[in-house]
Amino acid sequence: MRLILWLPALAGIAAGAAWLTRPGSEAFDAHLRAGIEHRIATTDIGSEGDPVATIALVGCKLRPSDCFNLLRQSLDVTIEDRALYTRFHVKGLNHTASCTGAFTRIWCREDPLGS
Picture 1 (cartoon, rainbow, N blue to C red):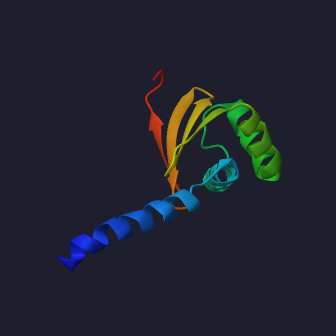
Picture 2: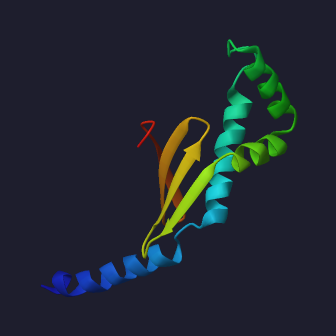
């Protein structure tokens, strides 16, 4: 019986924590930067069959920050601030993705093209 009395209080505390720890656009940019820099660092030069992609990868390996800034400018990011979480919709470079952020974490999934 006491557990039933505590459930609303625990739900209120969890909702307050979710509201206080929603990630914003700065956190999303940091998440995106980390993902791009990890991809640049782990991709082998010459693994792409396209010579233009190989040259771009070499440039990105030399200056990852400039590469991130260039890629970030080519992405269209829409941010939906909700009460307990934040939703990010990303479009660009022939890809779309939806990300959800809550409790200082961001989870992303790639959407099928065109949705």
